[in-house]
Amino acid sequence: PDLEGDEQALAFLVEAIGRAGYRPGDEVCIAIDAATSDWFREGRYVFPKKGTEMSAGQLATYFRELAGRYPILSIEDPLSEEDFPGFANITQDMGGKVQIVGDDLFVTNPQRLQKGIGQGSANAVLVKPNQIGSLSETMQTVLLAKKHGYGTILSHRSGETEDTSIADIAVGLNAGQIKTGAPARSERVCKYNRLL
Image (cartoon, rainbow, N blue to C red):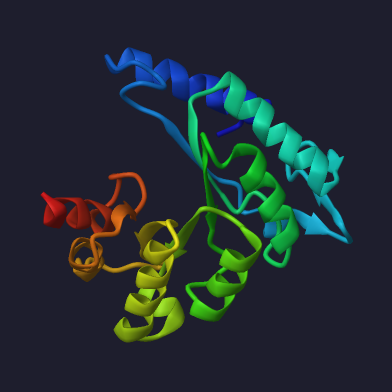
């Protein structure tokens, strides 16, 4: 959408939650996939629309401020994919109230997840079975995360089909969360139907 900025989008989401008859922050919360690795340039974060530049610390402060003003419950990839210390800092700062999700940080890889656990980087992991390559490795990643108190979110990948196995895997591993996109197209809706 052609919006002025991030805050306008968040304000519209809060308005939509209310118009749908729900209480923002109580019955419905917001999850953000910041995908910051896509806009990380030469040690700085350059916002795609505004062109504003921020350091990792400034960006963490920005996310904390947004979470203070809006019912944000989860932030995926708030920092770049190699910034394990930055993820640890933002998790220490916000992790008690906000789920800090490592997607690009962990890439469903148990070794990278173990590194993150050791440093306190993030408190949840996005798990994509076809990213790591096998169900055994997917299970290993989920079990490792759960052992250390990390949230687990099963996710499909871009270019998804109408295959619903991700819903079965999420239930079978008791992931607790699934990311399959807004129920706007058949390849997404079928996964929600399978969960039902």
